[in-house]
Amino acid sequence: MSRFEQSTKLDLERIIFIGRTFEEYLDMFLLSKEDLEGKKILDCPSGACSFSAVGNSLGLDVTACDIAYYHSGEDLRNKGLQDIEHALNRIFPLVDLEGKKYVHLNRIKSHLADKGCIVDEVKVSYEFQTNANSMLKIKKDNKEG
Image (tube, rainbow, N blue to C red; front, side, top):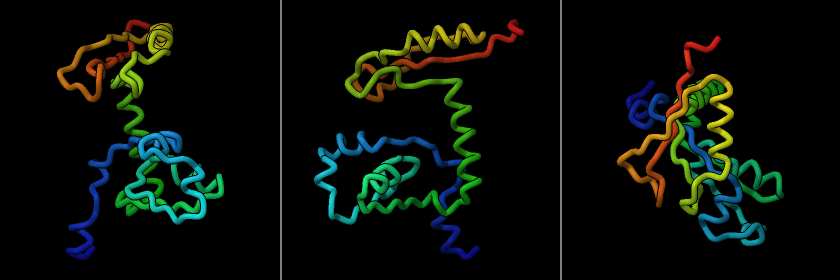
């Protein structure tokens, strides 16, 4: 690997998979599908978002690019699975985009408890957005079979 490649390569361990839906992109940028029709759209950095896949399926001309795509699909998949496993231990934030408590939170907590998990809602000092200052901490109860 050349010195240039080493300086521009993104370390796979530093990648965190987060993603936005097509609809979230439209909302974030105050766009409609009609605003994008007939245009060439570059989604950069696109990461794990579904914008380009959904946009192309709707007939839009969207190209996704991200420095993370330097890594193989298999390596990215494995890293994504690691992130999912990590996220299963902590869920943050517990609110929707408007800062309201996630409507299915109690159902999720109940489901996890039924599966033998210990679920605690923990306050954190970091407020990601309005009212987003608590997380779920989830542990598998080792007493269960």
